[in-house]
Amino acid sequence: TLFAPAGDEFKERLEIAGAGVGKAITVFEEYLGHPYPVSCLNIVFLPDSYVTSRDEQGCCVNLLSTKWLVDKSFNSGLLDARLRIASAIASQWFGGIVVPADTTDCWVVEGLAKYLTGAYVQALTGLNELSFRRMRDMRTAALLDDGTTLPPLASRAARIWRGGPYAGPDIG
Image 1 (cartoon, rainbow, N blue to C red):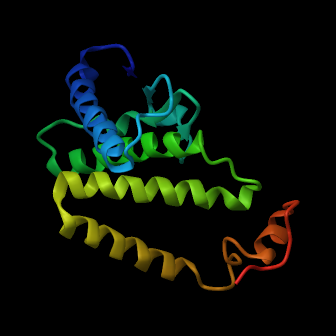
Image 2 (cartoon, one colour):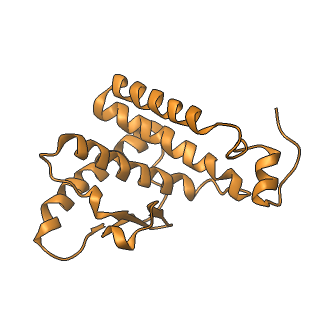
């Protein structure tokens, strides 16, 4: 079920978003060979002032900004909006199955969700778009991994830096 602020402004945009939700779930189920693991899916679109800089996922509710409700004539925005909604669904999918032992392990859920979202990108647009997006993400990660701002994600140093209880020896 999709929810948005009252008014005719979002009615058609909600229908467009709904079509993307159904396609995403179908692609995910086919790719994983498993039905959607959560008994309900609610996506609530709220104005930016009510949603943090990072959209929120819960057990049965996803909170997304109304900026993801785009007009169908805005082609590049429509693709980005559908991918953001699919990413929220994928995060919910794995967030209910994979429970990180520590906050520094949240990258596992995010990584699995992004990988599953890639299956949706490929189904929607083909392998070239998926390859381009993966290349862009790898370049961004390389730029952000400067070695001084933050330690590597899954290292002992990251767990100590974050104060995590599982600050065991590095693996690998």
